[in-house]
Image (cartoon, rainbow, N blue to C red):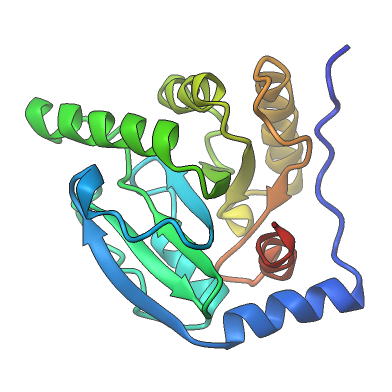
Length: 216
């Protein structure tokens, strides 16, 4: 029996406040990592954000934290080649993974990204959830299926976050959500709720903050 993968409900007042306080507190860039030995100590809960290049990952991170330039958005998709660590207060890491699926990136660089990504996902015991960002305009593509399969194999729970919801009409939104729900039914590591967001309009940001704040 497949799970229906409903849209996540808005948080209650207490949980919403926990999320607000977490992201309103100190949010600091820790380091960019290009190899596993460079990872910071695994001394706190961490969540990671993954997504195709140009999916709006930097904009979402900046929107969540209320800091316009915390994560660097680039006009050249695929430029970020590091695992970037941000500290949320003293007990959370937010981890920005390199964008994937950019066809013009050199083959050697893509191979390096993939190897680092596999090593990170398989070997980071404090990783509580991966948030896989999917563009509402396009839905889940073959390149997304690759990362979802990797998360399944690594036994890392992942949750899909649909981005750029303001860029589509209601009919397209419904079609994309249905497509994503169908795709997720094939993935045992998928968390059974989808979060819909718009960095530009603020939609879904409170929900995502609350989810991150309550992971233990």
